[in-house]
Amino acid sequence: MKMIVTNKEISVGNIYIQGVSESSIFLVGDTKVITCSSVSDTPPESEPTAPPSRKTRGRKL
Amino acid sequence: MNARISVVKNIKVLSVSESSIVHVGDAINVKPRSKSIEVERGLPSFIENEVNFSDYPPFNKPIPQPIVQEDVQMVVKNESPWIKVNQVNILGIADSSVFQVGSNKLIDTESRKKQIHQLLHNQDPKANP
Image (cartoon, chains in turn blue, yellow):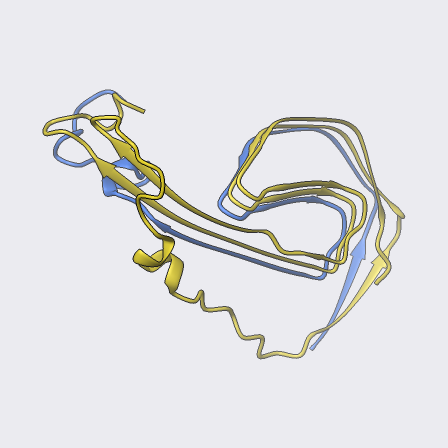
């Protein structure tokens, strides 16, 4: 497969990031290959995306 | 590879931790690795060398990597040699993450983490961070 990419002029103002974590990349530049791997074993009550457990349901976070 | 030149006028980073990298300039390979066991206890009593990484499966299992099946021939045309950014403001970089201003050939990051909660009965984990 052939792919042609044309990068036009890029000029960005201000970038505000709270966090770059769990093997992530924030790159201002060019690269060829990116591989990001992350293994995490977390108890369910500390995972913010998990549904609320019976213990914390209805409570204010 | 014809890489562009990155220009950032202002950089503000508050914290860089756990095998993370802030790199200004070009690189070839970037391969940070991090392993961590985080223990949260209801009774805050900790002894050194309590556990080994090898006791927990997140540190033993190999991470499967994607297999590239298609042969892609990519041609990149850069109409402007610059990548311009005025300001970058980051609060935290953690767990083998990378913030680079500049170009490279390969980035391969890996982070392995095990979190353990040993709380007292009816203790709200959010109340005791």
